[in-house]
Length: 194
Image (cartoon, rainbow, N blue to C red):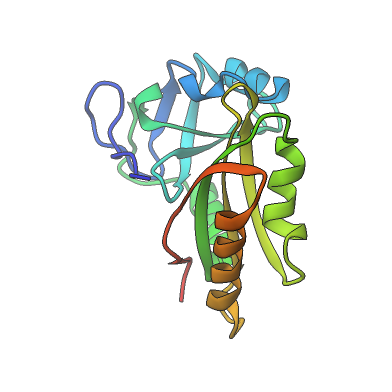
């Protein structure tokens, strides 16, 4: 899974703190839950400040309190840079300090799954990130029912001495799961501040 370049729809570079206007919703929202469609449709046409970039290069845009209490992750080619201040506001810098402080180091493993027909994708996703192991794992996932696809990640605290072996066991579980037709699993990466 390759990361998106931090370049907007007009070829201009993007960085944390830039103001961007959402000009389109990504194609990946097809098949997502109604709440996701609603959040993206509210965002189109409005400007937001880039809070952060995730591991695959998507922008984190917080819509609170401007439009709703939602926040979205959106590909950089769906936005246009609107404004870049030479100096960031104190309020934004405080918010960034809280975000950066909260990022404890974790080991992360991303996965992409095509499930067999008649498999409950939500249950499978939950099983993978939490119930599939008794360890203290965390993570998230998104489902595309029409494609029978799940994209997600599993994370575990980097201070856990068994973190890498736990993620390797989860990878093995994914590769041997009878409900999965195809699976792609990334390498294990250290995310956050060491």
